[in-house]
Length: 370
Image (cartoon, rainbow, N blue to C red; front, side, top):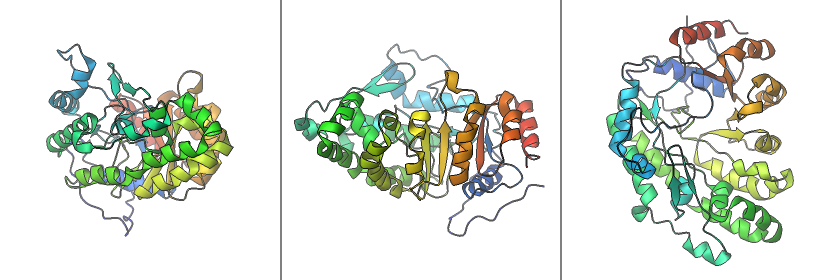
């Protein structure tokens, strides 16, 4: 029988009914146990491997222009709902619609221009000299990217109610935003020759983050929707996914000088923070990240290609596990080997599997993992 944990008293636990996930409350109990490094009947498991990549649609769009497809609110939401119709999500695979326009959307709120293709978007640096700081203008009421994300989020919240959760869009303030404005290579040079200007740029990127985060959180909570974003780990408290892909380019000394102070500000916006550690380059800064008590958990993203066999990362995962609960991405074929080397405490597994029989077998197998 499933052991149900009493929700922490500090959490305002409410009922969410999803036809695609009738066991939603049990799944949330496992997630909250995971935050505490505990295991109920089994560790949580999501049957979706690697990072979430938003599928713009499950059918062709008549437009040839990628931006038109990304901006077609009704098409994207209705296509998503068609794709999950009649589907039951197992384990802790939470159904969610992600109102995503690209990882640089936050930078675009201040005037960066996004370019779209069929799979993603990106921004070009536009702070070419320090006089261009005056171009960083946050006018949300007139900003094309913000307005479109708003439309996507609102329409999804209306149409997905009772069928799926809706996440808030990707928010990357701080140094990653500064790098989008200035350019990654140029920002590295600036850290050596103009450190005060780098700090000023980071300060600008953080100044309005609390306001923007609270805005999206209010939109979700008004519709009885928990707090979640691209990682699809819901929270009844506010939840944020800090990260710093730029950190792979710099030394631990520069990380502590430029990035750690910014992260100390960033993680204050939410009660739950799951830090996205994107590969070995970012992982070398883990000791500094562990210094942030507001970081409740780590998501380890080992990358593709030669980085994919999970077993080579066992020592690193054990190190993370000793400090924080950790999300680990692995294939179904790797599961038995992984379980033989690891303890389940504080582990949240992302297992790539689309076969329902295989998923059920994995869920049963995990109940015997000690």
